[in-house]
Image 1 (cartoon, rainbow, N blue to C red):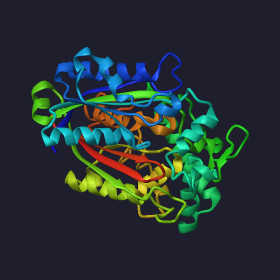
Image 2 (image 1 turned 180 degrees about the horizontal axis):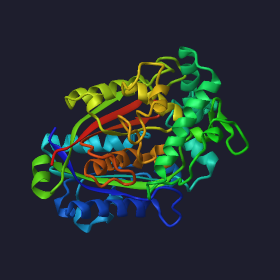
Image 3 (image 1 turned 120 degrees about the vertical axis):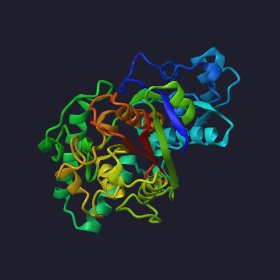
Image 4 (image 1 turned 180 degrees about the vertical axis):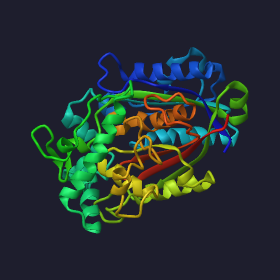
Length: 396
């Protein structure tokens, strides 16, 4: 591929009471363009990733508001991209396609979400719209409930007891929150004790058997942005350059409960990773750092296996032997991940690209992985229907 990142931006994540959907969008876009040293006159297209604007903020048709980033953007084509939690990576993919097709030279991508306008019930209902609603959301399935299906399927498939699963998932929770403590933009700067995370209690209730509160990602506001351009332009403009070596988009069936896809593995994610690695002409052993879609701790466990870090059913080995810790063979979610950094739906995929790019540039937001030259992103939408993976490489 011949597309590189020349500008990045990343907001604080959390309940941002002084920010609106609009201010988050504008500020992230402006910051990324400033970092790239471009103006609206240099931008050929804008892609805005946003999931729940109509529900969270009473705002559909959000893309034209991107013109407020810079008056010189007026009349530039702006497009909103929605693909549940993978919308951000989908927007990056569309930007790459536009550049590779020759229709654009420099593109701005912004991911944004303002979720905390609704109370818990409203957020739950809005997120349920990313399921196969007639058979899932409408019948009471929440997203914790849908991913609990994976946890139950995994236990049945590989013979794990509930206690063994609780213990494994607690290790993932502890890692996420420990990493987030070093990330100044993370939503939750609270460390978890392993015993607390593995135990059901008043402060850590069961949300959807066998997933507890400590297994679930956060309701978040936030934004992230990228400026992408042709690699030869990037090399001429910047002293340090990260190229997007590959991006693979794999779609699986929308529903998890209908039984058309496995409930013990992330089949689509596994294929997306395989394609991204093959297209970049690398293996997982060449990857130095990864940001992956830990919307629930069970998801991260399944991702260890989708990445090929362990054999199927043995994902817990990667967390127990230190493979996925900072300092291990492949640090996963040094930022704290969705679990502790935050998960503003439309911004999440763009956030992952920003975080990996900054790692490879040696400018990490939070914990820096030393000598990282190649990174991987894995972004998942819905309960595994949309899967987008990308390999990024430091080339200068």
